[in-house]
Image (cartoon, rainbow, N blue to C red):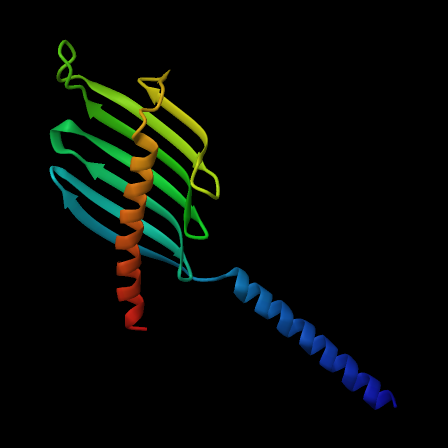
Length: 161
């Protein structure tokens, strides 16, 4: 009987150790980054998409407009949906009287599960400013294009595994 009890205790301890090891390995899932670049008109876009295993979790992007400015952006993703967007942009002003000057634009958006804006902040040279009606939908469309490109690159990278 003591032998049987000892065997059960040993098996229980080994099971617990195995469960802990599985849990730790699950917590240390693989992070993978995919880099890409493309041009659209005068803008060059470079991005780094971060995947947790095969699930997209974030995209960091830099758009270079040459003499017209530069933008750095972060997209955060949950379950394939854009939930957070932050962009800091330096853009050349093209209006009369200010032509040639640069303005600083910061835009921060949070989206709910349905893609509606939950929170928005837009600053132009540090001053709160209303969003223009096309900005949030434009962010979502651009994200979908980035996601499409990143997923294609991710699929190609994983194709060799």
